[in-house]
Length: 216
Image (cartoon, rainbow, N blue to C red; front, side):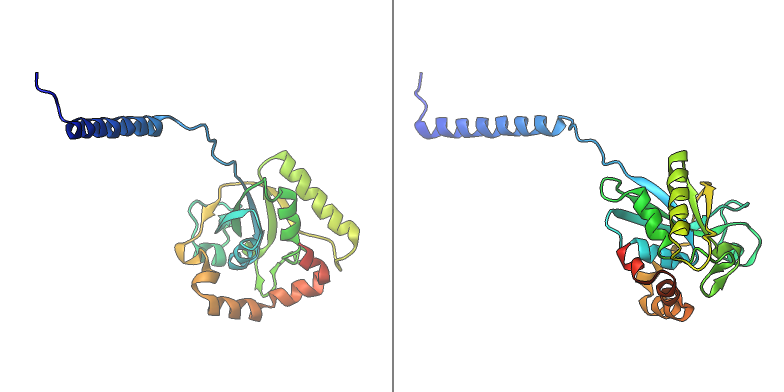
């Protein structure tokens, strides 16, 4: 038998090593992981113009997504024109997806109340009508308990000139608004800033809440 040369043996050994490494790597990729997807929660608030509510909540640590839309009304798949000009019963609202390990539902409710005029039963700031009223849409008894307690605490504090009229309502189907409404403040920053300033939103909030708004 002819003796194989050392270089030949080395090449064969190298090929075998590469093959074993590939098989090992493939096996590792096929092994399922034990990671569990992070648990996220959602909350729905109506606070007048949904562009502004979306912008405000995007600043909160722990909020991972905001969607402008409509809820609380009588018709399916409503349009902006229907909600703003017809008697649909829908509110302009924002659905907030958040990480409960970072921010609590209680904090979100308090933050919401401090960024609207919860004493106005007719709408918000320059926008009047049923679609611009404030409301907290609760998904379960625990959320209702928290919302009711936070509203009661605001009333008891006496910080506002009139009682809170923000409604706490059982959650209903949430209908996302048209694409051009989503992230409006980012897509149209100049128009958005002009609208917000001319509507007097920030000035009214400052008058109502004073320095306490900065704490939330």
